[in-house]
Image (cartoon, helix red, strand yellow):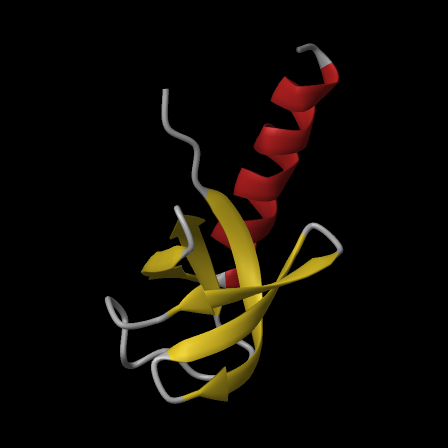
Length: 72
């Protein structure tokens, strides 16, 4: 099973960015979504931002992930 997580872009340096993911900051690649800007929410899989999300969908997705983790 694959799992994507939601992150908010805090910094951008070329094709790399720093994203805040559930309270943790990680370096990720934004090469697949080059239009990404600081403050955007993205779905992240295997260190790559794979698509942009609006804030409402990002928060709902994060809540669902936390709910699943609570029962695993």
